[in-house]
Amino acid sequence: MRHAHERAACLVRAIDRDDFAETLIGHLAERVAFDAATIFVHRRDQGPIHVFDNFTGEKAKNGVREYLEKTYALNPFYQAQRAGLASGVYRIRDLAPDVFFQSEFYNDYRIKVTSREEIGYVTQDWPEGLAEVDIALRLEADETVELALYRYLRNGDFQKADLDLIQDELVFLLACFSAYWRRNRASHDQSEPRQADPFGKGRISSRERQVLELVLRGHSSESIASQLGISLATVKTHRKNAYEKLNISTQAELLNLYLKHIGTELAQTS
View 1 (cartoon, rainbow, N blue to C red):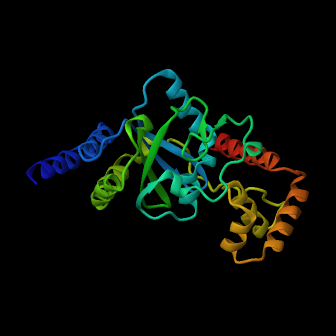
View 2: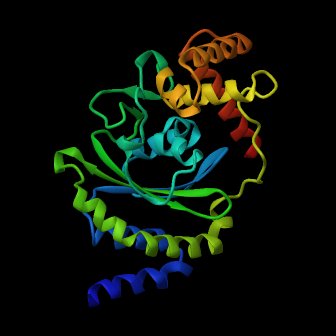
View 3: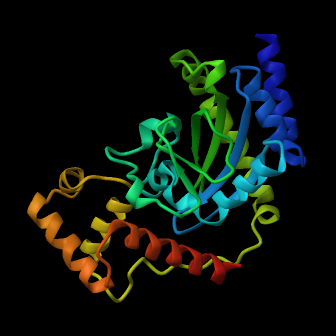
């Protein structure tokens, strides 16, 4: 018990220091074994803010840059937090919807589709063969921390006991990170706040946009019908009409258009 209190005190003292993120990761490493970690803060309609990663090697660092530039928009955590993900501890594979990745959908977008990955793909240059557990911390102003812990599968997957140990720390982690973020957010994010334009603005209806956003998140037509409380035929009609209005005919073209939209929004905030 004394050791636990000392670890907690160490993290609290780090709230006003530049090494808070490293201390936070060290704090978790005392509880659960993992090989690497990243910390991003997600905004609903903007790119994530990079807070920390301890990947080594230029290739892995390039993978982080690729993720921050565009592929974050495909990530199940990003999509889940946009839908209101609560603070908690999640396996990344449990956040992915029913038919998350289809190779036709993700060709040539800095994505490697592979069944060996938990969610069916990996960002170009991102380290491969990792099990991932995400700690979600809901902050003020519609922001969510993604504190991801990674373990090479050759070292064994995360177990329920690992997730339970992290869950025990959740309230404390949220309190510490919230205090740190109130003091240091500006030093991490230099972009001007703005309201992002919704995808397809002025071209498709709000319901059609809802359907396409669920398509982009990897949901099947049946899953979309269930989520929106509409019939399967209505889902297909909305999708067909939206495709016609956007002058596209395939999921690959939809993804291309969406990534261009994300890229434009990021350029306008930089």
